[in-house]
Length: 445
Ligand SMILES: Nc1ncnc2c1ncn2[C@@H]1O[C@H](COP(=O)(O)OP(=O)(O)OP(=O)(O)O)[C@@H](O)[C@H]1O
Ligand SMILES: [Mg+2]
Image (cartoon, rainbow, N blue to C red; front, side, top):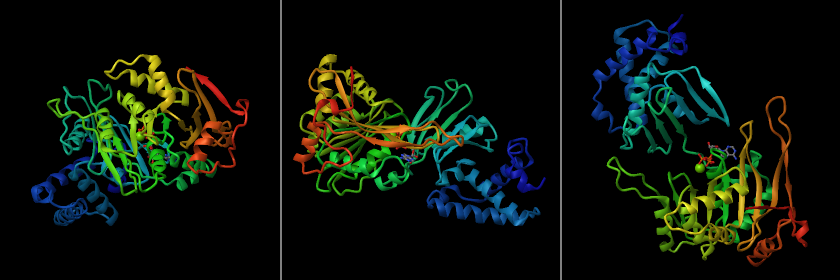
């Protein structure tokens, strides 16, 4: 077997493989010849170029017989390992990969275009994986060990990293890296079939008329991406405050204040929560508050803000349907330290939440808006959700694709009036319900 085949071959790609020894011996020689301290001052690309050059000299000097391809592959692997993230380096460079999932040293999965695949790669050992993990988390001043076996961090380049190690993980150290999400315009999202022009027209009117909008969906359904695109519809003169756990939103307007929460440090001090930031933001004269994800007691503060004049707020919540989103906000608000009776929370939600946009990730990886619902109930009435747009899916085809079509329904009178008063046109596809029985509503508790 040629060296190239061995470098690429999964079976040989372990400590037992000859090339594993080759890589680690060249890595050791490389590290002997370079000055690491000096290297750290260089930009990443220069650092790599420098290492490649030095290693090229070493290989020429030692004189193993290699083809050009074998030589460049060997250089790449050695430099990848020397640079720290080893076999993860090329994955991080590959823009088509949106998520990297390492389930212990022997199983590396990636997500591309919404589909998950296993790669024929592995770490030499659990120890080597652990060293890589330590290198990743130490760049952001975090520590992972037995007393601190779960770590969430964000790399300077924006990637979100989660680590969980034994004994909590039963299959070795687990590393999940989510690439910093590319932002997409609404036009691009239309191109993906995530929504259509009619829905964009409606959503644009709702954002500009300052409706409070909740984007709801399960993990990875595209909530942040849609929130970002919707936030782009906020008029440029408004003062926007964004509040996030890990800053992902990329608003283009000029008057944007970006706040990011902070976990406690190694001594367990200095935590600043989303809730602290929501409260603080109210004293910053916001025109709009955009909350990346509501997942705790901040729900209460946000609902209060929404129902007391901070209209036009946008937030995401983790839920599987529009009614779930309401229940979830209510449950989260009840978790805050302020005791608010459940009934009062219900009223609060009825007056705060106006629109819910539900996202779903389909079996074929496509992310779509599956419902736009308007909350059309008041006070202590049961929640009444009026569907104004919906995606009706067809059964999955043989090649695993999901097709379907968007349907539109009339807007409740109150919604239409708000749009009218804000000089926003009523999109024709929807129209206005003249009678209650023209609405497509359902009740939820
Ligand atoms: N409409 C879309 N079409 C195709 N890909 C999308 C779409 N929306 C988001 N994505 C991609 O899906 C991934 C997850 O998106 P995003 O971070 O917005 O989801 P999320 O629901 O906010 O996830 P989380 O629950 O982890 O916060 C990203 O890689 C993003 O680029
Ligand atoms: Mg998100």
